[in-house]
Length: 378
Image (cartoon, rainbow, N blue to C red):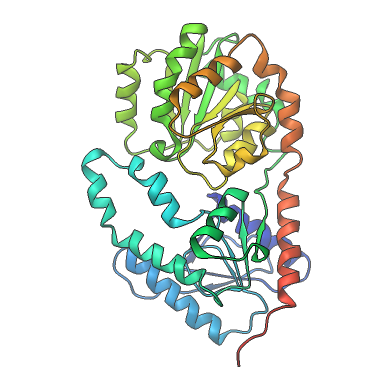
C-alpha cells in the first residue's frame, strides 16, 4: 500500500522497479501513497478507496487493485503486499498464519494477547492470503527462503515447480568491515564502550518477535565468562521500558544499553563484535546479511530463513527458537578470545555471494520468463 524508502519489501520494490525501468520496461507502481520514484521513468497509479480502520483499508485496497488490473494492460503483475490480483506473488513477509502462530503473541503484553486473537485485521489478512494463493490466482510464487517455500507448499498446496527461492540481497558498500575502524569505533566512544569490551548487537523493530527477552535471559552467562561484555539494543519498540526493567531485574543494568530506533544501522554493526537475533519468526531477516557484510558472525534461529546461509560455528550459530540455554552456549562460544574477530573474513565472503544486484537480476529474469506464459482472459 505504501511506497517509501524504508522497509525490506519497500527497498526490494524500488530496486526491482529501477532495474526494469533502466532496461527499457514500462513500470507502474500501484499503491495508496508514495514518495519519490526510484527511477524517472517509473509511474504511479494511486488507489485510495474510502475505508475506515486498518482492516478495511487493507481489504478495500485489495479490491481496488483487482478492478484496476482488470481495466489495465499490464504484461506482468507482481504482488508485494496483501492483495490477490497478480501473476507473480512475492511472500516477503512469509505466511500470515505462521507469523500468528509463532510470533504474534510475543509482540503483545499479557493482557492484550486474547484481544489480538480476535483482530479483524489479522482475520482479513489470512483471507487475503488464501485467496492470493488459491489455484488459478497466480502463475508463480517467489519466496526469500527455503523455509517459506516449504511453508507455502504445506499451507496452500502450491506445487514446488511454481515456487522459486530468491534470497534477499545486501548493499555491500553500505555494510562493510571498514566501519569497524570508522563510524563504528566512533559510536563505541559515544556509548562509553572501551576498545577491548566485547559488544553483542541486537537490532530490530519489535523486540518480542525478534526474541530480545531470550537474549536478556541468556546474556548473564556471557557476562560471567567475560565481564567486559556489553549488549547494545537498537531498534524501536513501544514496550522498550518493559525490556529495560527485565534487564535491570537480571542484574544487567550496566551491561545493556538501549539506543532506540536508528538510521545508522551500518555504524551500529561496525560498533559490534557479534550479532544476535534469536527471532521467533523472520522469513529472511535482512540484518543477518548486513551483519555478515560488516564482518560479524551471527547467532540466529531456525525460524529465520536467512539461517539457511550460515555454517554453524564458522560464520555464525543456528539454534532453535526459545532455546535460551543453547543461546547462552553460543554467546560464550563466540565470546572466547578472538574467535568472533577471526571469523570476519569468512562472514564477509559469505555476504558477498548475496548482493542486491544478484537479487534484482534473478527477479527480473523470473518475471521475463513468466511473461511468456501468461494468457490474459478477454
